[in-house]
Image 1 (cartoon, helix red, strand yellow):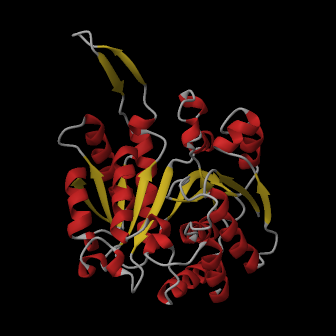
Image 2 (cartoon, one colour):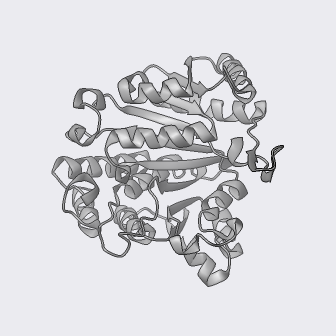
Image 3 (cartoon, one colour):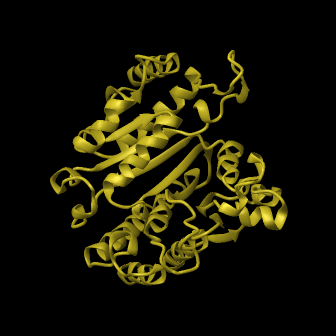
Length: 354
């Protein structure tokens, strides 16, 4: 089992270090770790946010554990050289078309959500976001408008094949969750032709797959329902732009982005599962980098997702998740949750409960 670790910028190195400690404590046979540069640190060392040696390492691995990228000092660089291009480039080069973001409130932490505790208690969902299409990857540019002013434009599009692929994965996720397989497809089909193709294709995919209860919701209504009645959702499948917004909204409803993991998956299979890139949903947080204050739990939970999805190690994944839940229940809270525990102390607490 080959694992590429890309710590990246800011707090990336601090949080991935704790996740690696947890993985090493499991003493997994055959697990080999390699470390590579991405983001601003890669630009400074190699002149590019994703150097060729990093891409080679990624392609030869079974999974990637990713920290975070971003550095304000690089904001003046040409767009293709900015740190954020590392994660976009990896998704594109490795065919990582699906982003899975679980969101749930841990028992006893309902009070940390901005929602009423009785509403927050019902948050337990998975957002499946298409990751390599939509307006983010469409043609774009700046031109002169008819009145002579500056005008920006971006093309939003989805092919039926792209939608069918992400829908099939969402249905698999729903069926694997146990209980009723319920999927909500989020679009804006009343306004956008792209969304009409999306909806039509998802309906066809559901009919072909069978065993799934499917409903549809416009994205504005979905945003409202996520804060008023989140318990109605099990699995949400949606496009790149809408998924980006809704997954951050769900993270805020949970109480802290320091607790939310994610997986980016493609079609490539390894000997152990599906190749993927795993990362916390938070950014590089340069304001607290190097101070030992970052909450590593999201990265540790991302490692658990990796064990489940890419390495087929369900038992070890559940062990990590129970250890994190136990630490939280015992009051081991980072500063993002109103506590006083630092990065290493949180890692120690998880290891003690492992």
